[in-house]
Length: 259
Image 1: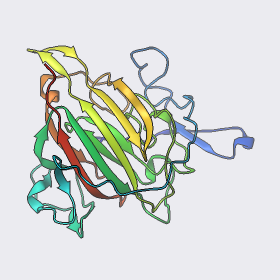
Image 2 (image 1 turned 180 degrees about the vertical axis):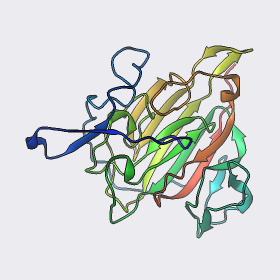
Image 3 (image 1 turned 45 degrees about the vertical axis):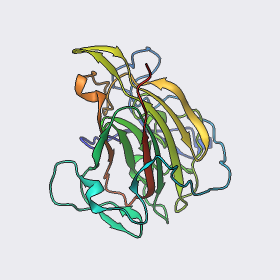
């Protein structure tokens, strides 16, 4: 869920046979394709697919390691340039208060991120293991404990938050390390005019969950935001949402712009 604003969701009870509640909204704008509202409570949830065994993916030779066993504190800073509140110890990044950003900025980029939601699980819906990975500090892939935890479809783990649910729910149980592997193509502009939107491909725990899918605009809560030229480049950002989600083994490979 975006770092810049929170709102209470509308909770709608399913029939008793469902034995769960669904969190979402019925008063948000329609998404650009006219099929669903943003965070629509009625949007179908993706099917569950159990991922294969977890494995540590070592950075390739040309990777820029942002978080590893010997991470320099200079690799990360608070997005608002205040004093650092997050902690880095033994290659693991633990949240403090506020959004954190990489010191380096990227356009087109390959990203590997590993994260761990808290155990035992606490809360439900958007209040359980919530964080986020933001490409160019603008386009969010949602981090959430979506293992046996229902929420609105475009807000669950690996969703393009507020826009597209993942193709499947490949979440591991809380406490287990999980991974996102992301290929991101930044938006293109001709002056202030959008020429091509941001496009993303994502694997969650090795399972394809988005394939060359375009963002309708920057990530926003309960709305679709407009593209701006500043969205073409930016740092990798990690969200503090008040849940102790931890991160490790973060590396990127800046991608050359095709001719």
